[in-house]
Length: 395
Image (cartoon, rainbow, N blue to C red; front, side, top):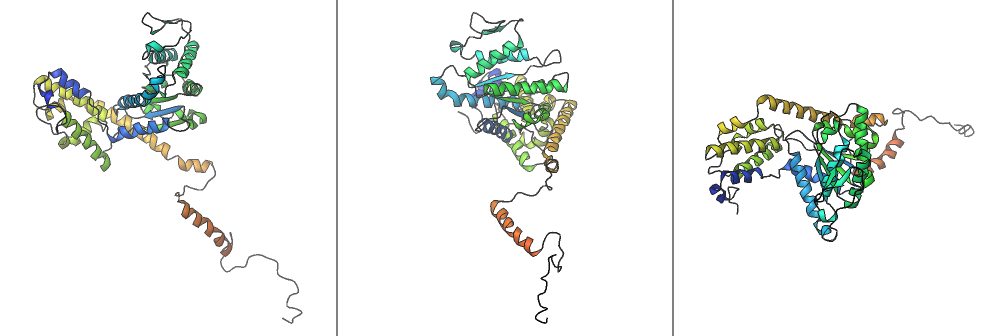
């Protein structure tokens, strides 16, 4: 049972490895993580889910933690169905591997996806009659060198249709950009969209800001995809500062040490050395805790934090990459004015509620009657005068 300190006090009598393992497994559900998690689930639960969902964010923000959280929730939600349909797999999660040749290898991707689909339910596997694809004695799939990429893709399509996962979660998806030409990059994205459409399984691509712009390679990709930003905390936003300090408070109370360190009091230093990313912060605190435990220290000191911090040159590289990505997103958000210009519409106007819009529509005809378009005040409208009226009357 956890105490007000945030961790079981019995841990203080446990070996160093047990105390470190406890903190290594600690995950904080902070606002940025929660918002991104909910955004992905909302997109997956649409009446017609998009074939592709792209989650972009800086290195170290916690994208892999996000993937694990979504994976756990999709499995938990599918448990009632699995009782009557044990052949179903709720979610497929894998990582896009960086290619050795500089060109993303689809054959390797298909093989890894098949392994991810096949391993969880050994007793309910399907036969995949593909040349070069066989089963070992323990029932797992083994891919030989003679396997052809088209055959592996057909096998993957068959598995996805029969296993019916809610989504395929592809981590480190920025490796899809490993290609020799822009045309091949469009082919990569079209292939994924086609795979998702043919099988009815949404593919969630999780990666760095390098993913930005991939869905804009064609109008069809843009229309049938969703982009979600999983960003850092910003020091120039008061709400973000409060959220970051709350994360620090949670971590400092969960460090299994005899004396609780004052992380919140050093929040600006910790923000600087983590560039506002909770993933970077957590790995840093993992190292600091390991060093403190190895030294037999009662707490994590400021000196310990400084010794375990990343070099400034690496942090500067991270900061520059994330600000460039944020600027690219800001440019995309400002494209509304260009859209209205291309469509021949007037500059952007604030959206009004129904009552205001109706009142404006009703007032428009009255304004048209009182002042005709193009007319001047106190000037008659052009019209034909009656002929002969008033002459016979002597007027």
